[in-house]
Structure formats: C-alpha cells, structure tokens
Image 1 (cartoon, rainbow, N blue to C red):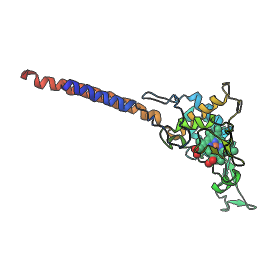
Image 2 (cartoon, protein in one colour):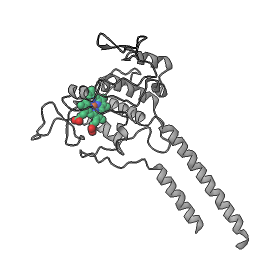
Image 3 (cartoon, rainbow, N blue to C red):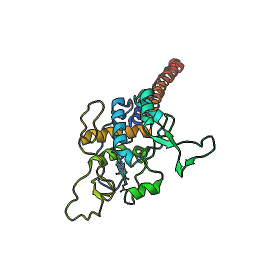
Length: 262
Ligand code: HEC
C-alpha cells in the first residue's frame, strides 16, 4: 500500500516537473503550432550559437523598430560574445552623455552624446513611444524583452508570427499599410513581414532562410525573457534528486521501524 502511494507520489512529481507549460496561447488568431526549443523540458539549455544568430537578426532587423530594454550590452557576454566583441558592439551606438564639467547636458540645443559602453542598456530605436508610433503609422512596436513570456506558449506564437505572413484571402478587407498574418489576432498587423530569405548574412555561415531566422530570433527572445533559465532548470534537477533520495531514506526508515511488527 505504502509502496504504491510512494510510486504515485514520485510519478506526480515527475509529471509536474516535466510539464513545460504547453498550454496554448489564447491569442485570438489561429493557434500557433507548437515548436521544439532547445530550452524545452527538464534538461533544456540555451544553444549559444543560435542565440548569437538571434542577436544578429535582432540587431540588423528588429532593432530598427523594437527595443529590448531589459538587456544591457554586457549581457551579450552570456550568449557567447567575448568582452572585446561586446565593447565593439556597444561602441557602434550612442547614448546621451551625463553633464559635462560645466553641468551642461546640451550643446547648441542638441544633447551631448557619447559612445555606448558595455554597462549601457541596449539602445532604444526611438526617443519615446510617441516617436515610435509616429514612425509606424500610429502602431506601437512593443518592447521585445519579455515577449516570449507574455503568455504560456508565446515563443511558439512569435515564431508563427514571423512565418505567418500571407496574401489576404479573397474578400478580406485589408486596410492601407496593413499586412495579413495568419496568427495575429484579427489577422491585420501594422508590422510588415520583417524577414525575407537572406535578410541577414549570418556570421557563422548558417543559411539565412526565413524559417531559420524566425527560430533564431525566437530563441534569442526566450533568452532575453529569462536569462537565468538554465540556473532555474539546474536547481530543479537538484531538488528532484534530493526529493528522490529523501523519499528512499524515509522508506528505509519506515521499514526499519516496522520490521519487528511483521
Ligand atoms: C518597420 C518596423 C518593424 C520592424 C523592423 C519589426 N517590427 Fe515587430 N512590430 C512593429 C509594429 C508597428 C508592431 C505593432 C503591430 C500592431 O499592433 O499591429 C510590431 C509588433 C510585433 C510583435 C507583437 C505582435 C503582437 O501579437 O502584438 C512582435 C512579437 C514583433 N513585432 C516581433 C518582431 C521581430 C522579432 C522583428 C525582427 C525580426 C520585428 N518585429 C521587426 C514594427 C516592426
């Protein structure tokens, strides 16, 4: 009897810990088909080469409209860029400098700028939301840092959105400047298809198909949403091992204590 309930307890534990939150995103468009990610499952981990490709897609394409405001340049070291590479990447961008010796922050009405450093946040393409809307026909390109965590299963949605652009079906009234996307709620999206084959030339030589780029950028956004994912999973494994050992010990003690009763 006890043995049975012990096994079912372990089974429940395993089930709970292996569940990856596959609940379908209720986004109102066509439900996105579920994809496989290297970070799925109990032993999931980041694929650093893929994250670097994803950053390249973000930088060369998405960052002209979207911010990832939770990420600093120095964080890019965590996905495999060296310290010097991060310095070089940061130095390509400019941020407002602090006040100079005279306490001035502006010169001739223009803010004083300096090159970005690894400790700066990844530079936002627009000064503020109004400027972002103005450049996008009134629609706001949302910050992408936490996008894949917006709802359970949202990584699948981001991938689906990237590959979901189609011609509008006959009879569908598409407004001026909008694109048809199978997975976007209502199917009319103010973002034109951001990816096209060879949209980037990957530094590692991988062929840049739309599918490849869509997977890489999504993997990158899984990382921006939870850079500490690997630590969390490792801790989970440790806790599970502890619980298994602990359960076995309790069982041994129980047998010992009850041995003369049998
Ligand atoms: C030319 C500007 C532009 C570029 C480049 C761009 N986006 Fe967008 N994006 C937008 C706008 C505008 C919206 C808001 C769309 C709307 O609300 O209809 C948006 C919305 C989104 C959304 C949210 C969709 C939703 O369900 O609300 C995601 C995710 C997204 N973009 C990802 C990306 C990724 C990834 C890239 C790079 C591969 C990218 N975007 C490139 C302008 C852009």
